[in-house]
Length: 80
Image (cartoon, rainbow, N blue to C red; front, top):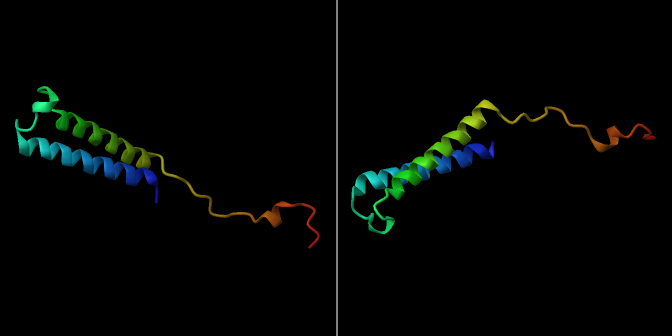
């Protein structure tokens, strides 16, 4: 499980929520943002960053080594 997947999914979900909120609310509720569609732009930015994280995780996956060496095996002078 890669943390980039979780971050990308959460940012994407929050972006979708903000974009849908702006679409459903229409022009109402934007009085405090000085006429700027703050929910829309923040939602789109979150969507872009979320998709970026998911693409990054997909294109460059984390590689976990299959074998590990125990500290005893690393010592060349181990009198066992």
